[in-house]
Image 1 (tube, rainbow, N blue to C red):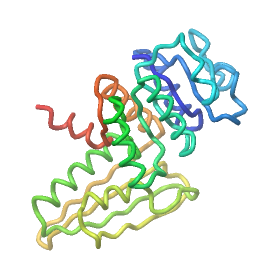
Image 2: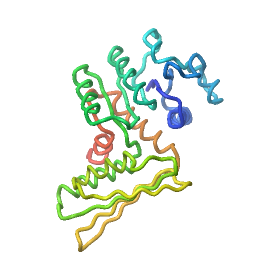
Image 3: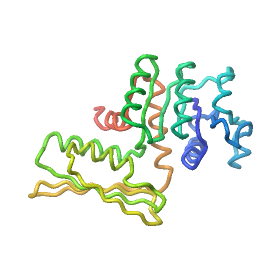
Image 4: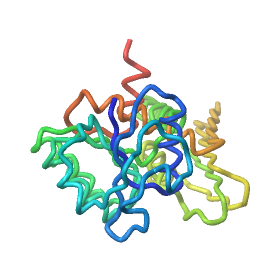
Length: 249
């Protein structure tokens, strides 16, 4: 799979290194915002990592002039404004796309869906990337739909600089289908990310906890999404893809 990457921040850089370390796929192009100081450089220059070939870093506004790179999918770790510009590029080039930034409204997510269907491209919206969290979302959704007497409580733990509550916790709450589901946010240094869900009907209790040890968990999820969407058109949430893997038999 030939991947284009947009955004070379902490998560984008981890994704690039993860793909290079696995050695099964290639990254041929990195896109950046127009005012990025990395524009015009190579990945080798910026990250000081070994690559078999130079991987150029190109401004998002200049990417339309690139004709000699054939991409199977673009993975986006940028920001809201850059994502919207990238979407226009993917429509023009018929590139499938994995969108990882999570600061989009429900109306914008619906617009992504309409865009994928109208333009016959594949889009994954992946505000939650890890396999484990998406399995929790799948489980919670199924439990709440089958056994309506269960109530839920969510505790999420992250480092001090993380906003609260997280988008992931809000998605899990939506999956419970209960407006009164409480989210408790803990902010202490040392956490990468923990989400704990407790479900009870008063006569039995289920507790599930997921912890990310490093950003490699996010990189792995993004690669799973890219592998899926390179062969599929239409719109998918990340938990749709994980659910398909869980229940494919």
